Length: 132
Image 1 (tube, rainbow, N blue to C red):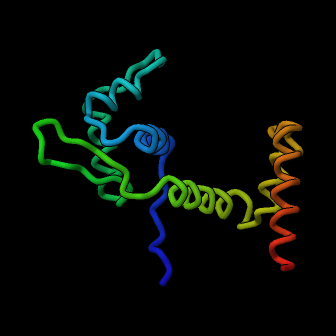
Image 2 (cartoon, rainbow, N blue to C red):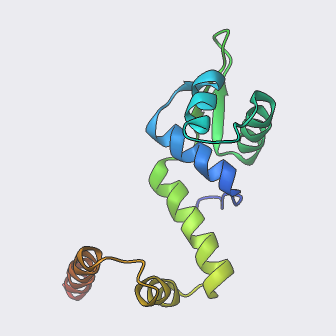
């Protein structure tokens, strides 16, 4: 049975998910502190609460109301979430082509030599596994 496709995330929602995948459960105050770390223009509590409500409605997070300060946790495992975001990005910007996405990264210089070496190893291991 195929998993339900997740709704796309805004950049701010993606940043919140990155925080929640690293540190969960997290209260609104903990998330507000993490979101505003290093920002010149701090996000307000109301803005954060709106983003959390949207993420909850989209099915990305769950809220635990059992304590006075609500705790938020990812409803989607990190690997599945990142795959969903990448799939949406690949479809939207590269017509669904993984090759076009990787080509863009390589040709733009966004991949280091070390990452290219790792990518080569990954392709070789994948190729070897497919032939077995």
